[in-house]
Image (cartoon, rainbow, N blue to C red; front, side):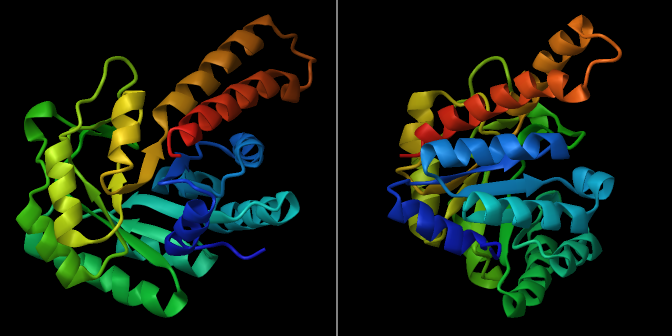
Length: 280
């Protein structure tokens, strides 16, 4: 089975009565079967996103081959997305390896430079049928070890979003509307009016980063206001590590490692299923 790009996977999601698709951070290869189990149980297509750190750790080609193999054997339409990458050469590596979607993150740059670099990535992607996500505004918290302080959060404006989409022709836009990367305790407050106005002005699918920490009610509302892709990573990672700490502590040194990992993967499957249910 070929990997699907974002536009293709979103269409399948909507045909199955989902308003948005979750994009789930894969932190290690051992988590991968848990993702597909959740997709099967919910009759949802699957979008898996990879940080550049994970891609370099596991290898771009290994990730593509593993995801494609499971997508085919489990009969799950799947998109493989490179998340939060500011290095155009790394994005090209992902494209050459077979990733079906990429994100150029120029949110730390001035608007003009962000537009220019994002346009370069779009021009690279179009002939390969690869979708591109851009980002405008700065989202708080941490992403792949990089922190953004609360005072540095820059909310996406309607005017900048409209210009950015028109000049880059991105397939989707990550917006800063009040969510926080890495938030596990406490709740994020989405600026729903801002979100609705950006959606109306741009006409493209919007992406919610920092999906962990958003209340269920806020999430259900956001996916009716233009959010078509929701990034989720922290909650899965927390649950996986917590289960591993427990099983490794109780296990014996000659136990099979799989016995330690099965409860962790079951916890990840449960988190995915709960999140996917919010996108109906």
